[in-house]
Length: 375
Image (cartoon, rainbow, N blue to C red; front, side, top):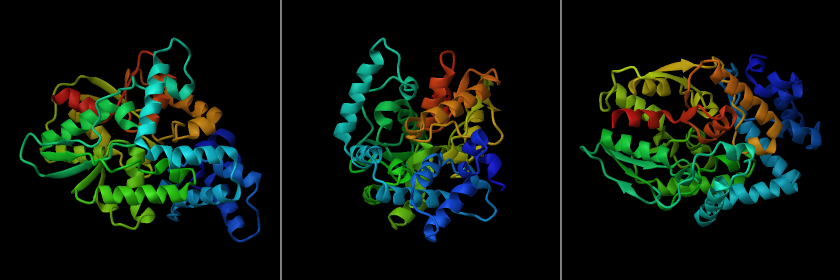
């Protein structure tokens, strides 16, 4: 029962079936043949955000995330609905095809410029950047090279969150790393894995493990991607996970070691939003705050429990009402701090925050804020 206060869907509904305990009981009943994979089981599994808050506090160390991914994989097989087939095509195939991603990004860029109301998630997009990409490029260190970092360019990060990549590459270069962005890499596979598209997730993991075989460290500047990369040994059995680092933990270490500088002047406050797959899945809490302080800002806490913002990958589309309610709660937490800058280390969270906060707020990756301060 320790997990119940930390579960966003249980807090919103109060229903046992919407709690980690209730879902695990349903999984066990299906596994032991006492229940079927029916519509009720489907609804219970699909309502989960997979925020990992329950797993982080579980005294029994139950691998809830993997259990949920397995349950959803069974749903894909047993209940192949039209929605699941469409998501399977999008998450399992389209995200591996860079040409289609580029075409989709161009279409979204046109939509951004039209003077019409934008749907919830799209309202939180940055101005899309088309043309210049980091994918397939190499950035040599300005100082003595201390190693080679392979940057996960991601399925949409280059076009949708290009400035985050710019800051990541620049900061790592200034610390002495050679940064490579392998041309043969693909989507990390997190969205496919969370949706139950297990075969596609395994294929992506195997491809990326091969693409990043020759680097010292594999770095991602999207917390959800990093968390999934750190689970690659489960998906591909390649021994890749030991070399994976989230950019926030690596940059914080470089600041602590003196390889990167700190700015002394206090520039103001920054509200810190902890992405679930940074705080709960990877247990990284201090690093973003250390980076913000090194950038000359004072980190301001908004939520001691790290309640999910409601983005959760495709959840903002498949469970729009719940996602919207959680987004509103998170935006209210930010507003209560009277702080105009919010730091978040995950693209989905950034989109959710921007769409619910509206004008007057800036949502930025901690490493972006740091690079602006030191350059």
